[in-house]
Length: 423
Image (cartoon, rainbow, N blue to C red):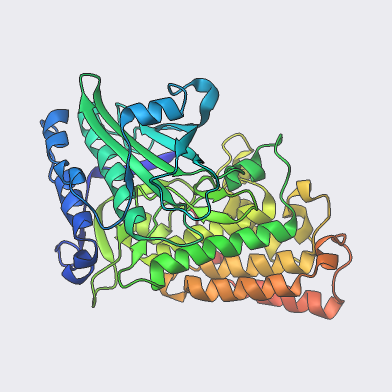
């Protein structure tokens, strides 16, 4: 999935042009401090100048993150062996590793070792997301790296990936910036939906994963004394543990929400992933928590269909998922044609239609009309409770009565398709 960036450096301000509100910044004061360093950097700054500005990492922090040496992480990943690589992107590579846990406070760890995922920032920064020349992309890459440390250092929840620690070293080899996370043994939702070699998820698993992701977003949006907008929700950023519990990952683009009394944050640049970004954010640069809700609606349709938000290798009229599903979701007789064929009819069509109706609420053109994530958690809970194990494995044709079909079709038709566009 291609990522994009529009305009210049990711300098972002509240509606009145001010920096994030003091009340929120006081809770994570070092977030604002670190971000101001990156946003004030210029193309002419050298990597060493930028490194000098990160001296605050040597100071004790309230987040209890472990500071690793580069040597420790090199040993943990067998010298960053390609055989230990579990992911690769514009930021660099992710390796599986094992670290000693004697200094890591984690009651879930057994023995003296812990399986981890080590993300190493490459020398050229996040070039997959950011269309910058090398010097500026390095600065932006560091900014996203700092963002991860700052937010995951203070935000903890069962549906957010745990950040164990980080490494920030500079030597004759250059700048070394790494992040160490708990290892998510079942990789990402993207792997299970779109890679044919991986076993497909059952319908009930998909519903529970959707609810887990909604819980994670609800915590960021509503359950802390400062709001966090995730800004890059997509299937590759929803990771699955050994029990298929879903957790959000990659906070590189996360932002603090608007100050009290403001409706949104006005940004001078638009960042994210093509196919997932809300239209009002793309068109105006105005960012709100409801931008995440739109992205969640796209993910729901990916769960239903088993198709990516954008499929460039498909016929032109099928490349954009939301355009492709439009004529099917409003007709209950055709709806089954868009359900993921890998489910092999082992799903409850009534449940799938309710999930599509929920996705439509998230995709409302008017952002204010979209539900809050806490409301979506509750709605998904009802769908899960109504989808019994028997119905989960029932053939698609074993549906409710015709009256129930018409009722579901009528609720779906209420959605204003003329206003639903993917740009």
